[in-house]
Image (cartoon, rainbow, N blue to C red; front, side):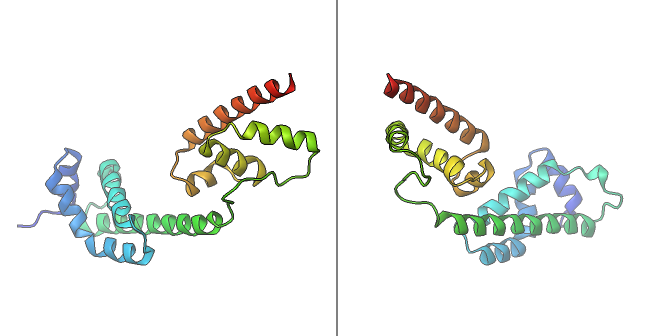
Length: 177
């Protein structure tokens, strides 16, 4: 006999792997459809992971009516919103990835001395640090935009930026002496 979705979610809350697999199989048609629409390499896995996270944090006590249809509708609509987020992420990535140069050059007009000094300081940065500095200060990207372009967390980007600015400051003072 097939278990109800409510029971499956309750079992999944108690780390029942079989219940979680059954929940994912219930939404497998929708998952495959969205994965095909997104045409990404890891979108099916991303959507499965989203369902797992959603099921783990869903509070069934907040539902007034606890029928399978209501719970299924909730999960289905949440999955659709996640698909839209992924579509926007893919569009943003494709739109902004092509504008990033392979080589970095200072795109602003500054004096020759400042240009040499800045290039000297930037030469000591790693590729990742240089990428973050150029995106933030020369192209005007936000940290959130950079996290969508490169698979880096927001706090990781802040740390990279801080480390890069310390290096630039150190090299600029060394250059001035």
